[in-house]
Length: 93
Ligand code: SF4
Image 1 (spheres, rainbow, N blue to C red):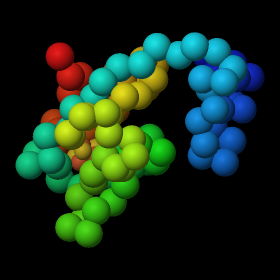
Image 2: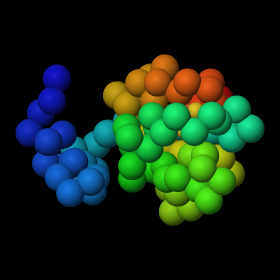
Image 3: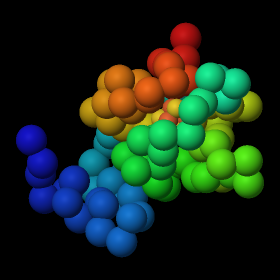
């Protein structure tokens, strides 16, 4: 269910959610060799993923928490993983 904080946090593509409430985060790992460039991740989390010069998705450099790893809201993580057509995204352990 969307709350007013979710709506406000997405205005302009900027996430300000942490200013409004504490959001649990999940680490997502991208295995880039499996990426097929479907761009589902870019569509779902444009603040975290971008299109690279090779036409595949990559984690934005300022969003990486470790090489090939990004943190996303708990609520978004399962959607990202299931939407990844190439099986390149998984929850990091
Ligand atoms: S959703 Fe998966 S396969 Fe599609 S562009 Fe992103 S990482 Fe690549």
